[in-house]
Image (cartoon, rainbow, N blue to C red; front, side, top):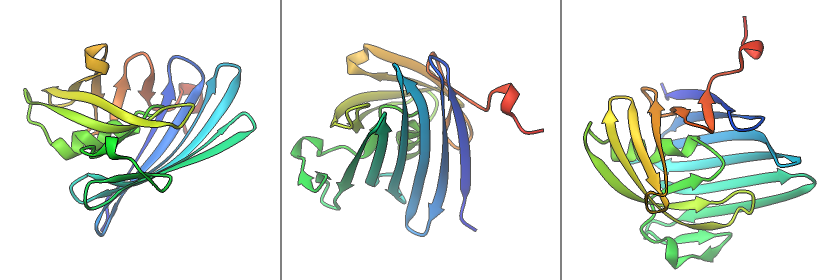
Amino acid sequence: MPQTERMFWRRIDHPGHEVVELRQQPDGWRLHGIAVFADGAQYSALEYDIICDARWRTTSTTVTSLLGVDSHTVELVRLPTGEWLVDGAPRADLRGCYDIDLGFSPSTNLLPIRRLSLDVGDEAAVRAAWVRFPELTVEVLEQAYRRTADSLYHYESAGGKFFRDLVVNRVGFVLEYPGIWTAGMPPDQAPD
């Protein structure tokens, strides 16, 4: 029976939430999510669909955003040769990226965590195709993950200028992204 996991996060820094479903497929994994949050004076809604192969390497991603009255979609494909296409155009600068990183979501930290399968004390450098928000532009983001305990990873990007200690669950989903996201519904919205 295929494995399915779901997560719900709420923003800490401003109003918003996200829900995601991870579903095992015959040849890999599918991550599908929706995020809604305040971005300044207006609200943003984003829907994404990420397909990974059996080794957790991203093969395709589609992100659609609704920001105010504007809608925009970006599509990324990683070919078997390792080359990337963004909206159908080749992007040589993304070669060597195995992961997608959605700049608005904690869900995509799962991808390198699962792909790398680090032992406690191990660390690895990661090159990710980073989808920036709100522009939905794509660039390379150099990252590092160090597993410091069974359920704790030290994450860095931007040459160490940005860092967080991420608490994860048994699947690899982030439970606590300090200062930005926390897992679970607000107490007043939790089902009885």
